[in-house]
Image 1 (cartoon, helix red, strand yellow):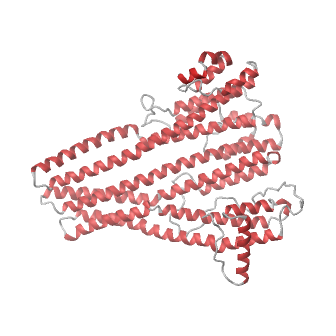
Image 2: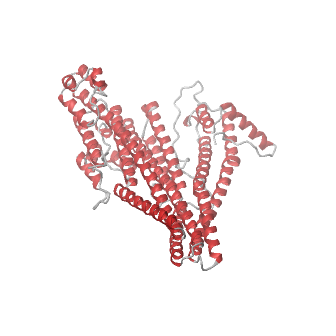
Length: 613
């Protein structure tokens, strides 16, 4: 309140300066925020006048944009908080529960009265605390809370991008209907994903269709697929539908409404590229969120399995020093159950390879960001020459990337243990991919920046990439693959042997050695495989080999592209290749010279093409 007084700005002044409708608009969007914090957007109204509907609509949209941007940050921060709750509470409860079991076992083999009572009391208190914590964590379901916040943040970013597109692409035609549409969507999203936990937290055991929230949001926004088809025409609608397969069809439509007014191929291409840009931005968020989920799987499963295995090993050892019959059976049973559970969890974890899943999502997110930046560059730098070919090119790249890095696990998950490493392919065939014509007006237009020297350099770079970089990453990837296969087989076998050995503790002197030794080795193998993230290393090598193959195919298709005027400018292309390899143009030329010299002498060049990784 003091900051408001210093700024000499009040709610009454806001109402007087911009009118009751604008004030109410901002107030309803920014419910819990300070009204006067972001008010720059309101000052243009005094210059435009109250009767200027377009200016008022633009101002309201800026107000909504500010509120949506703040919502993104709030849900992101809340998601991080809930994620910490999940990991810390799970680790704490597991450690408490497993320590209880060990202390209960120790209490059974103590011959002194007081230590027995102390161990029993400690064990009882720990079990009681773990029970209470489990009741709380099961009530709130932190993993579900985290996913709710991730989804809310992604969807708010989607709205933010649409508003930015609307203001940039169709800033001359916004009206009150656009404002109402965005307002309804923001409020529907607020209702679907509430921030507070007390009172308005979503029910964690829902009944009925899982699509209730999404359908309710659509109903509130009062927009349907049929409306989209009617307002924009079948071609644009189909374009958007094919890009956003699994997304809500009718969510982003404002960019389409100017098509009826323009009718030009260039305007249609720009509109379609904006649609693809919005879809790609959402893909980035989806793959980022999925990567965070699977990173949690890796860390939580690894910690849980290691704690279970070590506790089972400890209890198997305790079973051999107990002189009472019943405690021996209890310890054997507990140890056998723990080892069996660890074996089952290890088999699932080794099948899915969470660290590799995380790396896949990281790569997908990075590559979608790359496409997003390229589209933004096209729209900013070459918007006057865009056409349907540009749209088709981007569409093919998006769909190829969807295929290379699928989101689902069931049915389409990438093979985790192939016979041998094959470079990841996330691009459409380059022999049919569109090559943008250079429009630079240089002095030698017929050469388009290309010379025999540049072409020869590019050919030598391709040879080095084939013989050194790609081959080396394939070799290293195959080593990582073999090592991962060995560990993935050894882990469950060792923990299964420990489970069998613990069942015969006391009956055979060899059983204790099998139970304790195999349990300890299973923990070591599991830590090396998943703690060392060998699956991630394999995926990194596979992606790096794909990077070199893409660069190799790109250079070859460019050199075989026919007319020089149809190619990208030669000097610019050489600069891009140099940057991708982490070299300067001078270093690129030196590498090509060294490669040509080595080939002439019948030798293999020792230097790698890339200095980046």
